[in-house]
Amino acid sequence: QVQLVESGGDLVQPGGSLRLSCAASGRAFGSLVMAWFRQAPGKEREIVAGISRYSLYKYYADSAKGRFTISRDNAKTTVYLQMNSLKPEDTAVYYCAASTSTTIDSPPAAYATWGQGTQVTVSS
Image (tube, rainbow, N blue to C red; front, top):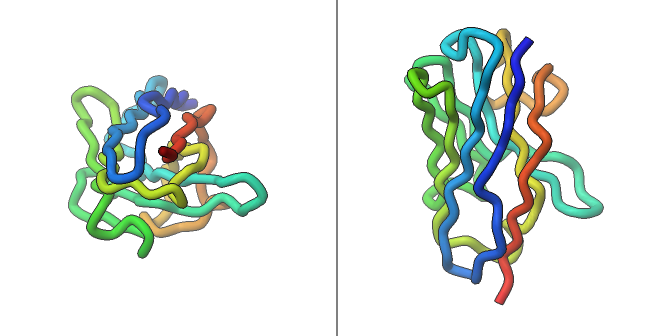
């Protein structure tokens, strides 16, 4: 079993930046496809970005392209989400997810393991 712990969420002004981290433990990190999802109040959980096992492939939702960057450090068993030019509509709980057998653009149902989430609020 793998355990995921997110951190880095905060209150930030529009145009600001945040870096989210997701630390994994309990299983060979290099065998995991990783992704970031988010869920705003009253909305469905949606994928933000995904990354393949050795960072060869990355996926970004249209809302994230050009502003967010997903990366991973397999030695540190951590995946990151650098978020720049944040907008109020980015406000949500951000979740890290892991899977041993899915593609990087898969929907939430394809991921078996989730972190507890970290709140990102973009507001002036």
